[in-house]
Image (cartoon, rainbow, N blue to C red; front, side):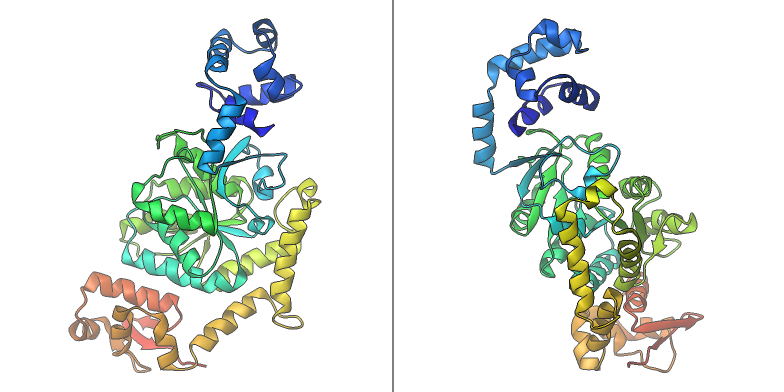
Amino acid sequence: MSIYHHLFNSLPGMSRELFLKLLSDFPSLEYAWEKAKSGELLSKGCNESFVEILKEERKKRSAEKEQECLDTLKVSLVTQNDQRYPSLLKAIYDPPILLYVKGTLLPEDSLSLAIVGSRTMSYYGEQVVETLIEGLSLNQLTIVSGFALGVDSKAHRCALQNRLRTIAVLGTGIDRCYPSENKKLAEEIIFHGALITELPLGSHPERHHFPLRNRIIAGMTLGTLVVEAKERSGSLITARQALEYDREVFTVPGAINHILSFGTNRLIQAGEAYPVMEASDIIRVLEEKLDIKNMPISEKSLKNDRDNRAKKIVNNISEKCGNGNSIEKITIEKDLQKRNGLGMYLTHFSLEEKEVLEFIDERPVSFEFLTEKVKIAPQKLSQILSLLELKNIVRNIGAERYVRKKRG
């Protein structure tokens, strides 16, 4: 019974090593909680302080009352033996023993991408997240992130706006909303995905919780996209954990003199991440991995029905294009449809981007000329131009001169 996983997980000082020992050395966790005597616990290698804590907790807590509490909170307990447990996450070397879940976990969530980045997101980062998730929306990837302010929250919101499932991995107990500003967002995520954590109820947002959270984000997804990160950033920890788990890492290039681009540019410089200019760059890499390796998970996991169902989704998307066409082609065709006419594709841009585009055509114009024509600060104008390049609308031909790309 998973309720006993919860009871042991909630004990003060419970370590992963001790938890695994209890699972392997006792007939069941129910037996260890309800029937195991002090002498037996000590003979199995449990230390005296743990045995004393367990004796006290047994007096105060029961499986029935704990289950009532979880039911009231509408929290599900998902262990590694549960079919709902994310198959990709199970394949890493240190998967969580127990997940607390509000919402639903589906087999299709095996087709997922993590999007992480700075809490102090810039305008450029905000627009990048919007552009890339819109481009990914046709492929029905589940978007996973860490529920923090900045890039994480933006990724969850954009996923919801594009009718994608999204999963938030928390660095707190499932009964706490951190940051508190995200209370409404949490409710929306529960309805269209899930909140998950391995931390027991009541856990506060302590510093050491976030690397644990980051490994879940990296472990349960096919790849991790980093959007803006300082040179020392938690997002880079997530990226390196993804590499350890043999998952793909992507990042968006940024200005070499911008503090939020130092981390992302370093990943590219080190050859640790694919540079991303548009959504099809991500799909191309993931599609290749899906086709060649049938998902980066163990052979044992591949036998699971939930992974086979997830794989069918990829095939169904490919079939929509007709014979021999790829997921990438669908995305490209969708982009081309948006660009058929000026009026049509301008609806996908912000007011400031539209203002800048009014002064850019197929004849080169200088950055200086644009600063004179638009009422936008030079630093922000530079970010807008970078975004328009990312959207494949504008091209920098050198010497800070820009032209509009020809439409097909």
